[in-house]
Image (cartoon, rainbow, N blue to C red; front, side, top):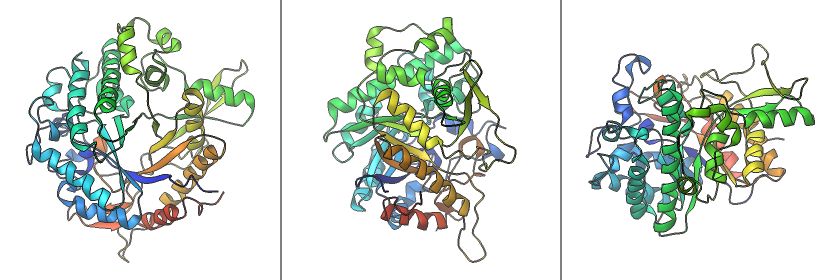
Length: 452
């Protein structure tokens, strides 16, 4: 079995992780530029100042995408490259870069899927309170308006926010990511609410201004609750676990997605968070819950759940020695079956897998090639599960491998490699890995060459 004929086989990147040119042509700092310069925050003091130098090498990189045979390419824009101060004056050179990138992709027959925000919040706005400022959603809408006016004559696929659980949870709760804050839950949930308002206002802007009919989604993340067995009790327990909410944590699906799709915060979250829930109005929830065309999912791993004696979910410890990525994420292919299944069942929207991939230890071998059989096996197993979900009625639009090329992996710097393309960060030499050639065959066969 293969996927639908127009399935979007792609790869994904983000601006700060690949572009470099951090202080060139009018771009001003983001929170990540500052975070990288704080001692001990990022592995060995690595920064995104140069990264993959994609800003200067995008034409070469488009050539690699074409060689791999990508049908689509998901990338994010640098907010502070477009609007250096976050609002106000537009940086024409920044917009011109994305103009050329989009044109180059279309000339190569690759469909651009644009993400507005992938964590690199403008530092100028962070000094004004960032996501905790109640004006933040309007700042974001201004930025989205500028980009939509410029690119929507050629771009039809748009995503508002990437992994809000991360940029709020890691950035404002645990402090592991930029801006590095460790806040109490009332402040964290205020940031959540403003980020959701930003999403909704962005959708409004795109719908009102796009020059060609837009297809709009977003891209949350999270571990998938996988039932230990296919018994009805375990399946029900895993479903309940997937939609559960724990006090003190924003690592869930329902608190984020119910407002976006259903227009209300879920009751179990109101109970879990209690007095920490920020004041919110019906008018604000109406803004947040603008209709979407698809639901993006960034999925990598999952955890096993079984039904306890009372039928309630119980987490199951994995066996010792279970396969893991270099990131120590457990390999759980079933996540690409159950995750889309849970979301499609609850919300009824088409699903796009907007990120999935393996952090591996890759290097150029003595023969000049990059051999990464673990990545090939990993993606085969995960895509096979996604195909199973599609065969059972889940509407799946596409699969975007994370990532196109090895890049800056946030607080981990350059030590984890997720790419189909190996990058020598000293010379900027690109080398297609074995997985890139294998993925080309997957795309050519529309997934039919992956065995059941």
